[in-house]
Image (cartoon, rainbow, N blue to C red; front, side):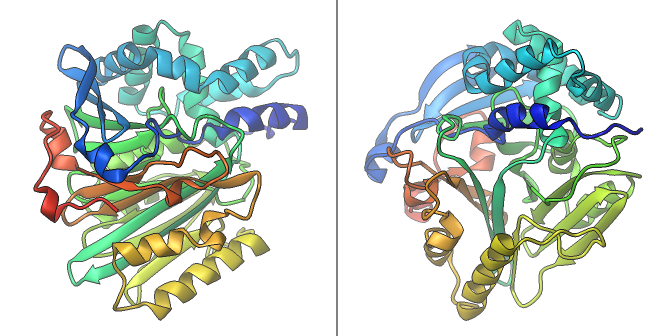
Length: 408
């Protein structure tokens, strides 16, 4: 299917909305021990699903059929969906009345490439939150329609059977979303349970880890989308997260497709990591060697790669750090790396790190950076508070032994 990319006016309007690329963090900074000592506060529930506050982070536990998961999502998070996506709704209403606006037919055309279970989940969100379905569909195809953001991700081998993966996203500090992040714990009827840090209203695997220890993150590739007969990236990443028990599964799911949204996927497991580059009809992958693997927001392998200087400088800096500390890397060293100006982008007055997550696939532990109070200080400068996926999937939310599960 051929569609031209939306025009300049559309993109300029949409760019603001597009700061939506995963939500901002819910919960404010403070003494890390004080965050850990706060009791879990359940704020709402709907049948077996619920919403609670833990360590200053809003957590939403969802289970059931795809429609039930979506309905509970919409019911429990209606206010968050409406508030966090205001930029999107403003663009939606403005473009809805644009005579030559191509966004609506393009968004609708992408629906035919969505798995049925994710359409059902989106319809559940729309019904649960009493929001027009086309708006939810628009929200869930927006990342594919427009390019966005900066990113950095890396994995390193801490021990022979323990990979640590770090995921960074940067975006404008003018956008409030980056302090409204929701941690979704989803236990579907099919596939694997997983944790995902998402913008409320998304059906996505944009940043997450499943119960088999597979981590997935979406990243910008800086290549123009020219083919539109593609599964939108958010639902594609969700499928990878929900149905992969190995990195081979990730590659197999991807290589069954005939066309691709123009993005990067960084995936890791308990023992290794891979980067999957794809755009339109091209795909390539890069596997971990020498005990580490890093990526920035550009492709290195596919023929249409478009490498920009800021992105290569960032990647080169990260690779030098990982090589210098090879054999001595641990979580503290990883945090040291993401707090450097080159990786955190603290030097940039407009755009910097607003999401920083650390995953341990072997133990299913993960840590979320709580952004500092100031909008001008990157999220990675805040404390990292910990969760365990199996504990959250159990529905109890109880902590593992705090002595073996530190905050940072």
